[in-house]
Each structure stands twice: as C-alpha cells, then as structure tokens.
Amino acid sequence: MTTRYRVEYALKTHRRDQFIEWIKGLLAVPFVLHSQPTGVFESRSHGVEQMAEMAHRRYAEIMKDVEGMIDDHIKHQNVGLHGQSKLKLLVPSIGTFFTRLPLARAFEYQDKKRLISSRRFVPPSFNDVRLILNTAQLMGVIESGKLDLATFDGDLTLYDDGKSLEPSNPVITRIIDLMSHGTKIGIVTAAGYTEAERYYQRLHGLLEAVKVSAKLKDSQKQNLIVMGGESNFLFTFSPTSPYLLAHQPRRTWILPSMSTWLQPTITTLLDLAESSLRECVTNLSLPAIILRKERAIGIIPSVPGYKFARESLEETVLVVQKKLEMSEVGRLLPFCAFNGGNDVFVDIGDKSWGVLVCQNYFGRLAKSSSSSTPSNSEGVGDEVVVAVKGERTLHVGDQFLSAGSNDFKARVVGTTAWIASPAETVELLDELVELVSMKKEADSKQREG
Ligand code: IMP
Ligand code: MG
Image (cartoon, rainbow, N blue to C red; front, side, top):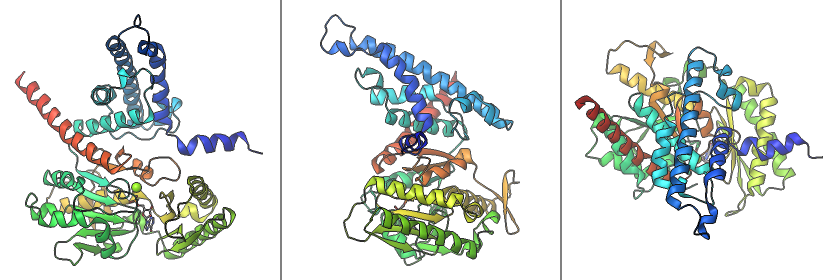
C-alpha cells in the first residue's frame, strides 16, 4: 500500500523547495484577485497596464513583508534562537541567512526584466521566485561588503552536463573580470579525479584563458583553485605545470575536523554504498556498471548513450541515502549521495566541506601576505587562518533540492545562487556587475546629497 508518508515524500519533500513554494503561494493570492484574464476578449475589462500596476504593488508589498520576516529570523539567529522565529514556524526547512535579502528591491529588478506583473494567465512561478531570490542574494552580498570568494559547480553551472568548458564559453570573460577585481575563484565540483589532466580536459578553456590573460596580475592568477570530488582533491592554478594545475597533497589543506576521516571508515562507508547501489541495479533492472573510486562510488550506464529514467535515478539516490543515514558509519563521516543527471554518485564529504576548504585556503593565502589580526579563524597546523566569511562567499550551482542534490550542502557555509543552466550563470554574473555599479552610483549620490 502506498502510505500517505510515501506519497508526501515522493511528491513533495525532495522535489520541492519549501521556501520558494511558500513565497509562490503568497503571490498566488494577488494573482487570483487582480489578474484580468478576461481582458483578452472583453473590452470592458481593465486595461493591462492598470492591472499590471495593481499586481506589481501587491506583489512588492508581499515581498517587503517576507523581507521583514527574514530580518526577524536573522535577529533570532544572532542570539541563537533561530528555531523560534516566525519564519521557522511557517517554513520549517528554512536555514541560515548570511546576509539580509532585500526582496522588495529584487522583485522590482526582476519584474522589469520578466514582466511578472503583466501576466494574466500565468502566476508568479518557481523560476520567477528563484531568480528574485538570486538577485536579492547578490544585493545582500554587495550591501554587506564585497564578494571575496565565488565558488562554482561544474556540470550544468559552467558547462552542459558531462561536457567541458570550451574556449568559446562566455562565462570565461566574466570569471576573469571577477578575478581582476580581487574575487577568489573555486571550482567546487563532484567530478573526482586524482590527475590534473582530467580536470584540464573539463576546464581547459578557462585555464588557458587565465594563463594568457593580460587583465590579470600574476598574483591574481593564483586566486583560482579546483576542488574536486566535492571536498577531496585540491588543485591550484599553476602556469608552469603541464596541465596548468598543481595537485596539493591533502595534508597541506585539510581542516582539523577532516583529519578524522580515516581510511577504514571511508572503506566501510563505500562498501555499504556499493552493496546498496548493487541492490538498486538489480531491483530496477538498470543497465549500469558500478564505478568505485578512491573516495566515491557511483553507477553509470553500461550501454553507451543509454539514458536512465529520472525516476530510477531518484529512487536509487533515496534508497542509498536512507541506507547510509541509518547506518553507524553514516553518522561518523559526511557523505553526499546525488543524482548527476544520468548517473548516481556517493562521495565522501560534500560541498559544504569543499567550499569551507576554499574559504580557509584563501584565508591562509591572505594571511601569509598580510599581518592582520585574525577574528574568525580555524587552525590548520600551527597557522591561524582568517577564513573568508560566509557573507562574502557565493556558491553558484544547479542542484539545490534537499535530497539527491550536491550544491544544497554548500548552503551551510555561505550564500548561494541557484541557476538552471550555464547561460543563467553568465546572466547572474552580468547582473552582479550591474548591481555593483548601481550601488556605487547610489553611494556617490548619497555622499553628494
Ligand atoms: P558537478 O555538477 O560539477 O558537481 O559534477 C557532477 C558530475 O561529475 C556527476 O554527475 C558525474 O557525472 C561526474 N563525476 C565524475 N566523477 C565523479 C565522482 O567521483 N563523484 C561524483 N561525480 C563524479
Ligand atoms: Mg552540477
């Protein structure tokens, strides 16, 4: 029998973002009350402009109210009572906010672009809300200082699934522009290879462009790193290395809390994941081969060009994840089970650790070139590191559902933007440039006035 629990779980929890759905629900009310679908065939009905104006005002009011609730949640967060905020009661899955989210302003910005208020038949959608949240997050980061670290997922964020970052990819000039303004860059990908050559194959367009860039000083070129296998393999840009990347031995960069990830525990976790994956392959009759790596295990199609059904991939992720969560070893070691589009992988560690390592790596680099006194710090060996803060970090990725997604984990260590394609990443970075210049203009007007 299909229980209510299973229906709810399958239909909602892992395929919905509660916060976005909640905002969508709030915006649906003015849409129902003020949209004028009959205007299409009835001349007596309100004009589209009047309707758009009214809908715009009501949507903006709602976004302002939600913004206020987030401010209240942040106040609770600051005194360790985030569990008691009104927002937490309304949206139990809500997490930590690293900055304010100026939602009303972000709505104004996106409404100009997407004409949300002018629509008569299609209410504010998941994508509308997701993009408003991204804009608000960029605004929040800009308001609270400067973007010190941008981390990017690889597949579907920088390039199409399973493809490479080719020299013609428009994201390259945007990343170089960010680097020229002092932002550090981490490519935080699940793709887990031990050799520089494999990363070069995936990222060569960017690596070659950074190498020859006249816009970047040599010191700025050092501000590009690749964190592979979620949080397992670190490579730094190195113009003199054969594949432009230098492998960094794990002992030089792991965080103290990662030193407890010992080989016997890793083997036990991967063994359990393997048996669980094998079970799924049998039960779902998947034409798959099991790929076991040093720090990951996955299934990929055994027949070239074969596409797994989405449902089979999701079922496999949820089964393996549950099995690991319920196990003893799953409580000893962080892991990430996710649906990679046409494969399922279980990695040791996750992107929260990957981004955290980037924050610490660049903190350490900054420390060795300055003598400032540390305030927020994490020790690595004898060093005290001033890590890049969460509110100055932005992780851009495509996988933000609560189960079966790997970018989701990055939310606990910094701000995030949820994009749906490599083209959206380019748009997001252009938006960042535009918002920074709008902020500068507003600041200088304020100084003059
Ligand atoms: P991401 O989107 O950049 O995080 O890359 C995820 C993709 O990398 C997965 O869908 C896999 O196709 C591929 N991949 C290759 N090796 C690994 C691994 O060791 N763990 C997880 N994913 C891997
Ligand atoms: Mg991805």
